[in-house]
Length: 85
Image (cartoon, rainbow, N blue to C red; front, top):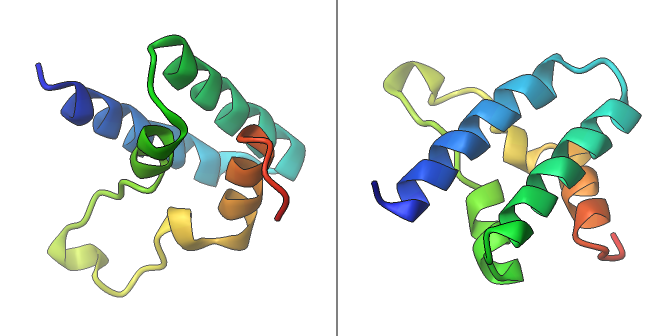
């Protein structure tokens, strides 16, 4: 299986879980754990950012806001990557 396809599917699943979590602290932990897993598998920061921004797009979702574009998600990603936001 293609590595990018595998991590893309994992990223989509993680975002679905992210959307269900009630607090930013829980969301931060989820994203940080996923980033840690990606780092353990040797992905670079640029590869990680690419994986974290993968979205599942279907025709029925054309008007929905993508999770990767929400402020809460961007903040969790920046925190997990040790970036200032």
